[in-house]
Image (cartoon, rainbow, N blue to C red; front, side, top):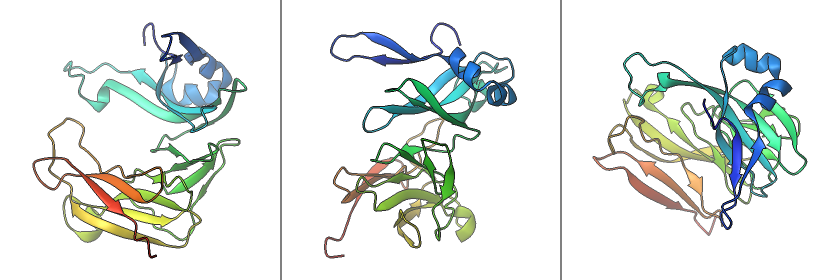
Length: 230
């Protein structure tokens, strides 16, 4: 809370700051949803992500919580939830959803991929599962820019009875098929209060996947390259 609860854009050439979405306007537009999740506590815009064409943005909402031990490196210091999508070009709200998950834009600047894996239409907020693929627990999904594949990490520890076991999966964005391309012990890596997850993402040409691996004392960047013959 405080002086900066809103979504602001900064012009990197001039330094000009423009307020795009005010937190109070989010509450005014979606009073029931905000009240249900946060009550009367002051909300702030959190974790905004721009669409590739720069015309839309989604974000979550957050409220501050009092942590008795004073340790700010704690999830209990804030309550963060919901997903709100806003049309910057036409200055209007598009939808609000109850769960944040781990969303990412597709290159069409209209669809959003989220855990499930699911695809959300940002015009309507309607979300549909990608058919014929596993749910991939612990996932942080994204899509290749050519919109042919989705990429996600997956917590394999429970399914494989191997503590710390994670993998990286690639699947058909239209559904029906997927494959785990790598698996590893992800229980080590750089020491932080928030553990490093693989978070796979694609290169702009859709031919490479980059992800974090925490199999040793260091968090290392791995690169997987597509087989050009397939």
